[in-house]
Length: 555
Image 1 (cartoon, one colour):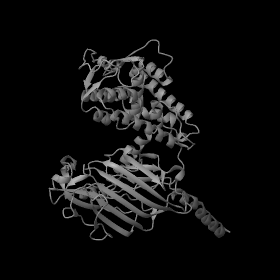
Image 2 (image 1 turned 135 degrees about the vertical axis):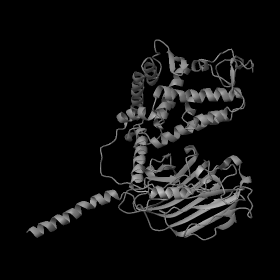
Image 3 (image 1 turned 90 degrees about the vertical axis):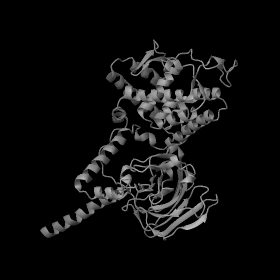
Image 4 (image 1 turned 30 degrees about the horizontal axis):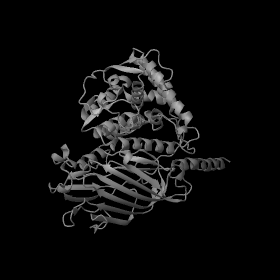
């Protein structure tokens, strides 16, 4: 009887362990083929095009997200496009799992268990990817490593093809290929592509999707701007191999390992604090939610809290509801009484600035953010988050196009004033503003003196016309508009916004965390699967010509 009981308990223990194993093995797929076109551009930037062919395993979760590594963080998400089996991927965000990489949300086009799918990703304008060749200072070295996945999540062999397209003008006799990775032919195939560029192709039909492979070539520096060649770091100048340092760190014992885990944990926790949108807002509905304001669209895109509050500040200034008395520290002269026609979040913003104590002001601004997030969540019920985000990004891009394509400084200034709320949705707003107004005058908007208390309306560069500006509909003559040099205007915009963030919000992470705790609290722990980012201590990418993508993906 006792023996039978022991046997029964043993079998029961095995059976009980099966669901746990199944939960842990959430993702399991084969990467059948990986094709990467690597374009080394004449301006020194890098453009990538990945084509990834997946076959999902049976009895596992759908492939609903794919993380793709990018060589460094010198890129813009607005320069990334992707699709799955020809269906556009609209959910493209910085990956929470890969330091330099993006997460592609496949949504309703997720690759189901037992099914196959093709994911295509194109990334343009990656900067700081070229180094001085360690054997010839007249040559630029270009090294790239395609993205890979955790070995516990990908099985089988992968047919990997990496195609280098060297900068235009490089002749077939000038470039040099580097040593091929293990398993690939000693020499790449050489050809000329349809643009007349030298092309190197490496292919291995029996590679795998969980190993990092590095490919490299060098070409004369004269084909790219000198400024595009990344300067070597201190270790390289001292003749120390950074890969060896990384290896030593990897082998340095449990102390360093736990320090690393602590760093990763802190970094993940910081990212989690910035995610204030409630999960239910991402539950897919149908169609686009139109009619949101630029501020509400910023919430939908989960822009940082300081950026959202800055957008509200400019809105109330333009509506003559307040004026800036001083920028550092920020003090406002608020219209009394507060106009009831203002939007709810604008009224709450002004009420917060009536508080003289910084702590009380921040508390009211946090309450404003919480109410605004809840309001947007309510408006989004039944609508598609991804389609709506794509719609407002399109509005943002059209606004920039109208500004950048303006024929005269007067029209450009007017368009910037009209569309500023939408252009502020751009993560590269600061840089793009400086690019637009790098040269020529800026005819400042009528509300500018309410933003810059040091501005004197007597500063008028010249009368430009006695007629109304095209399309303004204001009846206001351009001759009455004072102007600033473009660079001064852009610098005033950028520094003022940065000052607002530090002075009013303080520590953005702490500020946002208090909001997140109300709108998107950490769920209670449950058993769940995990995924590997694919990177490891071996992923140093600090070699003499390194531009490799230290990342993985495939959650």
